[in-house]
Length: 237
Image (cartoon, rainbow, N blue to C red):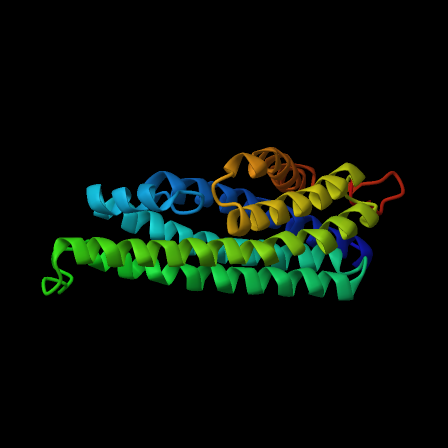
């Protein structure tokens, strides 16, 4: 087997692993929201999740941390696949993603504090119930502000990513265009959540774009991979 064919087989495997990581990451985000309203849940929903089912919230928090790791692994896989197109831009989107993941993980630490405040064995008996509730809400709102802040980086990473997908020649240009629109949608969500927190409807249309763009890219990488051409060389479909 020639080195070229071996290289493309390796790229095919990397594409499918990256697509699989991306899909599992998306699933993990959904499960974190189901178990503990971690993600797009409001402060009341998160507090009720802690107060009514502490074990489920703990599970949701673990899944949320795992999702951050999966997202970073996905970004690394995309970097490996797209750096031949433009290494500097590929490095840029990897760094933006890494910063976003770091902020997201840091923002989830106040949820640990909120969790301990709701745990009867957490050593917080010196505080009254009202004080514990107030501190829990403070921790939850700190988390929500940090989570929104991470969207600045999760939005901007989509611009170099979308551009490289569009230019790549081995991924559909439509996916590249959708990823660029996804970047705009996430930036709208970032601005809406910080400047107009009462107007959630502003960011709703962007959720549809984000779902189609990111699930579409994940499925393409997982399902399509690479194909063998009639000239016995391999290329991305």
